Image (cartoon, rainbow, N blue to C red; front, side):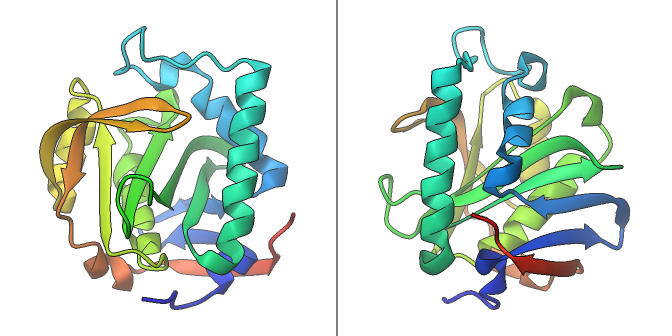
Length: 208
């Protein structure tokens, strides 16, 4: 299915939920990519990864990640394969996430990923962010949406179950990133989130 509004890919935007007006979900673009790294590079934000799984964010790795993002970002302006967000409260980034097509795993398959700052957990932000990402999944030209986590991440497992996912043990590796999950969440009816009550403010052409 084509996107309901191509501006999700061609413009910058801010999304809010009526139930959480204090939280802004802003489009991740190249000029603010550093905000994603602040979340990803802090080991406190990944308490369920073993020491062996924690990534070392060297300058080289950061640049590789930035370039992968830019390549995908530019491609998605016309191919509609990925959308990424920052989660902000009071102008401070407290999380990041995205939904990306992963054709190297299976054609028509998209993966949802998110991470929150340690200070942002236990406040319902995980659920709100997942709902936004499931809504945005409907804009991608994909057929199946899944997510994944580590076995020890019980809060994420409970959240996924509440949103309608079923779980299956399987190690998921993505080229260039290695092992990203030990559990897969599948069979979610992401299309039911297409009517999620949210407000979108398009703020102009997406920056390069």
